[in-house]
Image 1 (cartoon, helix red, strand yellow):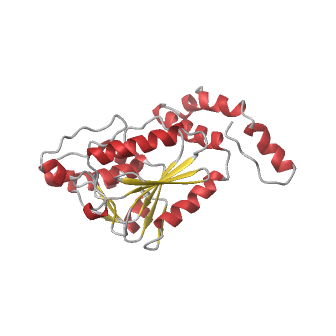
Image 2: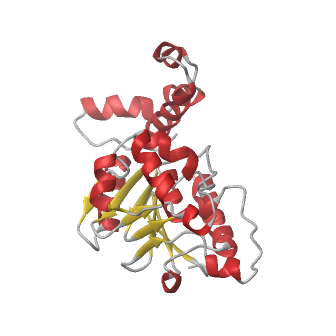
Image 3: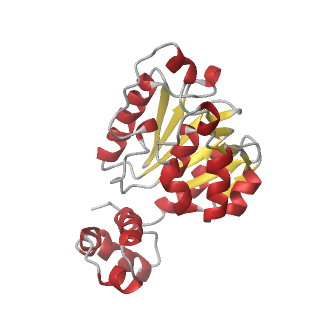
Length: 257
């Protein structure tokens, strides 16, 4: 266990818990640096295939930037991988799931936006309140929100700084599922288990291609694109193992190679 976050590994699953509940799991640069190292290790470990990030306690996933630390003159130096070690980690192919157990505000909301899936407890809420304190959602919020939800909803969040309850976030498409209070992590683990039933290289290629095709102007251009991650799947042992397991009526033994 680190000073600001806890890391658990369960088979091919890594669970990262922000452990600053006394400050609503807000993140200052030292915590951010620690989390960046954790996700560096996750990304580099061939045996870790899916990650979940959550917050300690039942009140907050993360309230974002630790403004008290900033107000006291703490040095604001962030790692290249961004807030929480995730918001600028654009090249990560392994899936990351947010288990939102309470408030996800500012940078906390931006961490959720940087994840591939989000499971929220019914007491969770989301918001980018930076304009209310003279700041901007520069951890990806300004850029990801208009890409993930309809523009009018995005502007409603960005221009007012208001908080969205979990149910409203779900209707907007900001989260995949809303679960009872206290069950965000269990819900995220359930989704992780479904991902882990799939071939890891196929999962990573699916994520990478889906993201890369957003940069193409037309569907035809996207379909005609050349994607190295696809070729990696076609050359992998798992590419043979999947059909073989199907014909033998057994579960596949994925290796990720």
